[in-house]
Image (cartoon, rainbow over all chains, first blue to last red; front, side, top):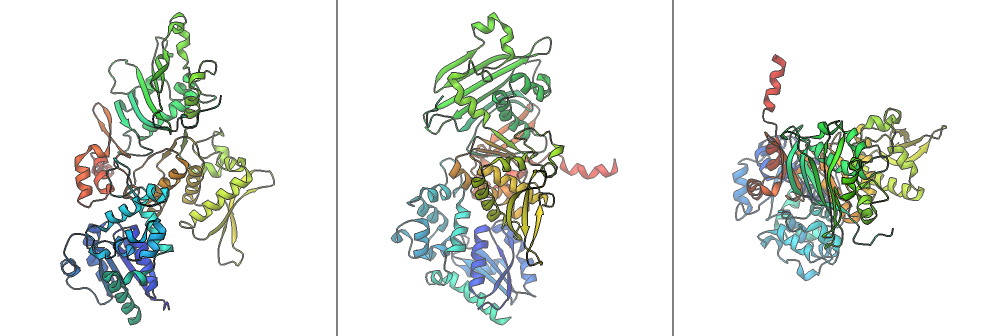
Length: 200
Length: 388
């Protein structure tokens, strides 16, 4: 399926990097260099540069919608008025964690939680990251709970090895095609990448 | 003496320093993972040295006089911010897995008119009960006794030998790749923090454990050095141990290289992975990010966290690296900011700064919020150096 099209990417963080690499491979392309990984604001500042590079080669830029807007189009317009034809500028609704929750079966097995505790409509969640942490909190495995949920007093939203656990999940278990059935923003991202891959 | 499971100390929970090097007075809680950040010469290494000092007191070949001598004497230890000649004091609280158990060790010292180091107080409290308090009657009868702590004396430390073993188990590591490659240049003492006996340590490990650990290191290193496919211990004709690795290559069989040809980054990462796999007492690390690619550094905090979940080992490290601090799993109570002032360096956890919490809530990374607070005041003047 892979036709060797190399797609560069820019993302917010290290979990997003694992996600975008998996999605690119799923769309039949090869992940190239992955840029950013220093938060959302960093991407906002550099978006013109990525867009400029996308005039010559295929790119995907993935950002979380968070609570910045009600839906993706206003964010896309506000960030970049004229995207280059080779750029997939995609927004995860509302956070990339929602994409992971959309593969209910695999996530339940990985976190060792009951399937019916995983939200059926992940894109409807106001704060998917907190929802993910809460799922981990109910895990039957102590290692998952300790890695993913914050200690009292840490002042952080996530546990000490939250990201590396999610990266492990994404790289070994997560199925983008299954997840796309419950997540429209993921489905659109895959479609866009497929168009890029075919166009090359 | 058999140790009670659950009561033997495992990590420091609190430290208080008075007139210790850069610290005129400081008192902080310690998490199981601690990140020390601050400008150059703020005292990050001197903070770590307080733990090494208690290790020196308790360890064979150490003791109070030796610990002072290694540091250049009492006056070299005393804070410049100290008024006149007050005592230097260290107090640590040590926790045990059974949460109700606590140990406390407190030592104060000064020097006499002949500039000899003298203990002015020493105290051990075990779970609320004072088991040692000096100076006692014997010390008053024979003041020369105050040239040694009771930690270092087997015949008097029986009641708190678990604490002594804990202090002895502290490990400091600051691998210098040149010394790993040329151990002759190091002082050759065991547990050389600079890696001079790193190969010897690997060679001494039981074969089964060694093979298993090297395999784990190889798997972990694949991320950083994908060409490296095998690592093993190998002895040359003189019996000297070497590490060698097989690199995948354009040659069909690949090629073996020994530690002499490994890059600085590969060696430092190997050393780091090796010590984190050893169980044991608190691990003190000096700038683990050195010579490593930023993309590797970003994953160090998560790697430490996952290793700690298995071993329970406390890790205290100093860092200048924004890549390391960008990790969103680092607790604000795990980061200690060292900020120099007229009255010595002040130490505060990141959660003591309201603006840090606000900045994080507003979407900044911990690195963005913390690094500006630790920046040297006049860094930009360095550029003027060229015109001096």
